Length: 232
Ligand SMILES: NC(=O)c1ccc[n+]([C@@H]2O[C@H](COP(=O)([O-])OP(=O)(O)OC[C@H]3O[C@@H](n4cnc5c(N)ncnc54)[C@H](OP(=O)(O)O)[C@@H]3O)[C@@H](O)[C@H]2O)c1
Image 1 (cartoon, rainbow, N blue to C red):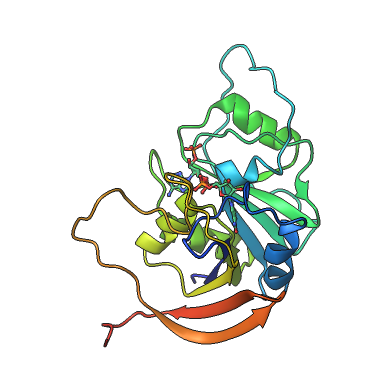
Image 2: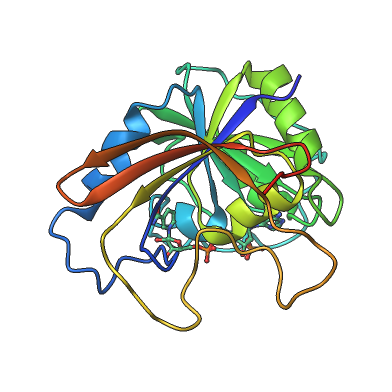
């Protein structure tokens, strides 16, 4: 079974997601408070976003080959909620297997080294394989449901990860906290980063579920992903 997937983001009116020049004192709350109101068993982010939460230490590379089978590893569960990272080649390092109250799950490809798997096992971090060289995101969602019982998953960015799930048609709902700012930085990460240039792909359409004015001039907009043919 595929979990129900809700993508949640804080974006400027021009779709930028990096808040470096927005000038908000407590920008985390504009993302976190609405996010906490979305019922979910887990949140999932891309490797770049997770490195804001994972260990800042550099781990020494192990000398020699370590042979650990490239098979899913489910650590003893201490938590019913999870923090998941899409980390295809194993770049996030961990001091513990928790981010706040959530237990970490690494989503890997078989490109990872044995010494990285040894690191994850030494910290009791669960990991699953989503493909040999490339990730099959549908398979990843199925495994998250089967191995960890995840029924509702919140995808929290960044743009690359959101774009991958959007392209694969795996997002059911989109929750956008629209900040009343225009960023304008050319090349800055945006809400959905799918591919460069215009090809055969068609844009994804949404159906409005609700809209609420919050924190003065912010809007919290919730959309259902339109799965049929859009009637405009
Ligand atoms: N405003 C908001 O609500 C919000 C929320 C979250 C993040 N952010 C911001 O967004 C920025 C980061 O966004 P980002 O788009 O640059 O990065 P990201 O999505 O956090 O991470 C991208 C990385 O994740 C891995 N990845 C993602 N999808 C993959 C796929 N389908 N297959 C293989 N690998 C995949 C790749 O890792 P490798 O490079 O290791 O292969 C890729 O480079 C940060 O500045 C962060 O603060 C903002």
